[in-house]
Length: 452
Image (cartoon, rainbow, N blue to C red; front, side):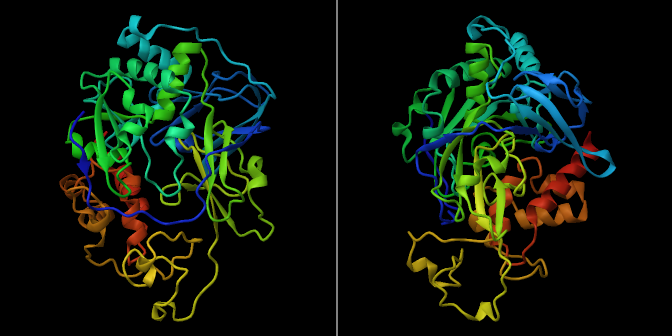
């Protein structure tokens, strides 16, 4: 085990609504959605039409650029509808799910007897290849590339994040199989990062065939991008892959059972959640399937697939993202407060600085909403970003380079090392109310276009 890496910068957001470690229900959704928008850089090619019968593991989409990368159905059922947006952009493929899931049989295999090419082919055919995220840029991994290394963050520090030890407590053997499989795809090893606070308390510290690292500190200590920065930073011309423990378990189940099984425990969290807890569901679960967790009679809830910093606002009729194991229910902040900046004695508001007196009650949780408490204003130089970003970068300069579309400066200031989630806290504390993640996303898209 390597020495513990202690991160000084960061911020834990004290939002209420942590999920209790209990599973309230198994969600047997009637409709499940596959969303191409979950996969950055994907040019989707539709492989099915309305009315087609599919099994769990049947191909639904392919990448037009790399057509051997398939996206398969998480459930069995009938293709109900294909949802398109502007310019016929493919947004969703909705599948009417069977009550009992039937699976494509990919056959069980002993990973130790497989070559790297056989592992790669099995993952491509099953639809599990999109589990790998490639850096730079956070896109679906290119199967023609051998990465410098593969990185796994085995703990989460995001607001109200699902407890990995609870959600994967029965998946140790599958995770080990998944690790053994993906380790064949790189010569640099699988780097497995754990929380240094309870390293010995999690069964995941017993995972073999990995290079263990431990991190301590506030969020974003659990972000895999931050971990990569401190273990082996990504330089120009280098490629690394990342994958979550949840998807490692799915890969393990593929080889151990022959099934494409991406079912998961999903944490339903947030200030507007009633009795927040876990459900067992599939990616693409509809928000209407967890209606007993909320009361939206006032139409004042924001439905977020993911956490409040990096999740997607999917709406009351939306669906869970492919990579998400958390739903956050938070109040839409539509109220305006006169002279709010002049009222420092507000005990029900949290401040990342010492603007309010929330620092006197460090253990208090807050019923936060979506209010910005101000409007966008001039983008000024500040040291606030550096206080919450434990990376040796110049985030203000990087964001301004993205705004200017200056590729040389984007490279200089670290575009190869970050994706949107890494600067999410910078956006949260930004006094200028700048949508930093959106700006960074535009910069990454420019890099993909110009550097391809």
